[in-house]
Image (tube, rainbow, N blue to C red; front, side, top):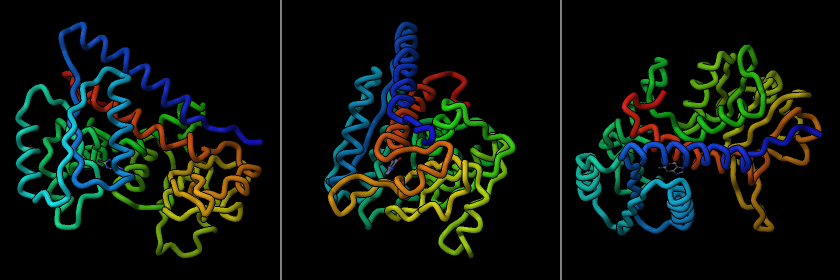
Length: 283
Ligand code: GUN
C-alpha cells in the first residue's frame, strides 16, 4: 500500500511550532492578532471561521471576530477593512470567501493592506510569489508544499501536474512547485486529453472540484497524489476529488480526505499570522 500522507499529524506539528513562535514573540512584548470577517451566515463558512478561531486560541493568537449581516454593503465592508488596516494591534485581516453576490470580491481583497494579507490573495502578494520575492502565500498550496517536504518527497526535477487553475489553489500551487524546481504543467476544464497529461505526473495535485473524478486511469504507477477536494457523498460521508480506493493501490503516496490537505490550510494561516509580526515579514 502507498505511504499515507498524514495532514492531521503534519498540521499539528506546524501549529505547535507556531505556538512556540507566538510565545517567543510574547516574551518580547509582541502580540499576534488576526481579524476574521464573515459576511452573512453561509453554514460552510461558519464552520471554517469557527475552526480558524479555535486554531488561533490553540496557538495563542488573539482573534477578533466580525460577523456582519448578509445585507452589509460593500462600502460598509471596505470601511471596516480601512479601520482594521489602521489598527497597529491587528496583524492579519481575513475576509472569509465567498462573499454575497452584491459585493465585489476583488475590490475587497485589494482593500486589505498587503502587510496584513495573511490569506495571500492580494495582487501584491500574488505578484511577489510570481517573481520569487518574499510575501504571503495562499494557505492551501503553501500547506501542500509542507506536506510534500515533511513527508520526504522531493519536488526538484519532478514532473508536477496541477489540475485546476483557480486563484486560491491552482495558480499559486503551480508557482510554488516551480519555485521548488519542479517541471510544472497546469491543466483545466479545456485541457484536451487530460488523462494523457496527468499520466505523466510524478506528483499530481488535484483541485478539480468534482467528487471522485480522478480514478487510476489518470495516474501513473508510483505517482504521489495530493487531493485538494472536499465533498459529501450520497451517504453524507466526506470524500475528495480522487477516488481513493481505486487510486491508492497504484500510487507511492496519497493524501486521504478528510485528514490530508484540509487541516494544512489553517496551520499555514497561523504561520502567516505569526510571520506578519516579524520585522522581516515572510519568506
Ligand atoms: N473560502 C474558502 N477557502 C478560503 C480561504 O482560504 N480563505 C478565505 N478567506 N476564504 C476562503
